[in-house]
Length: 240
Picture 1 (cartoon, rainbow, N blue to C red):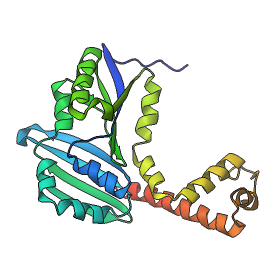
Picture 2 (picture 1 turned 90 degrees about the vertical axis):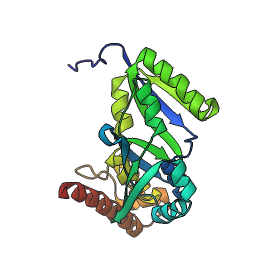
Picture 3 (picture 1 turned 30 degrees about the horizontal axis):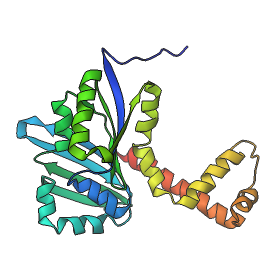
């Protein structure tokens, strides 16, 4: 029997989507590259700075970073002191040092914690906040005031198992899905739903192809490409 998990004390959870991120470098990068960027942010009190660790499979990330960095005023507004980025087999890594982070400052001043990782998805900031109900209500007021009511949506989370679903969609699993093309994902989905991976197999590649108006050879190619990408990410994680 599964034990029902409860939050400690008077804690509550709320999920947020902010469509206006006020001079955020990563929001702009996500918007320009039409991609999803996962972030981990750490406050370093001893040196009064914030470290941002981000990664994405977004296309043209490098070009978009160069475009944003060409505007020194934008860097000043986003409070970024230093930034480094590199690409490894299609995955882009970005590390930045910020002197100030209004997003986290509002949470800290409200005694609210932001669950990591959180994401920027096509320019929208999506995250979960944790704190006492009264503190979260105060936090919501501050967020609405800072970003503007029409740009913020939120909902209370009553079931803890919902958190795992949200967080899983924002971890390396989501990065893998970003790497796969729409056709590769569709072929994988149909192969799974039709029983292609069952033993014995309940469907052939021809049937999958017919449902998508693709040849057996094309289905095979998409499956092999998808498998390769997934295995590459598993091996990348194993390397560390």
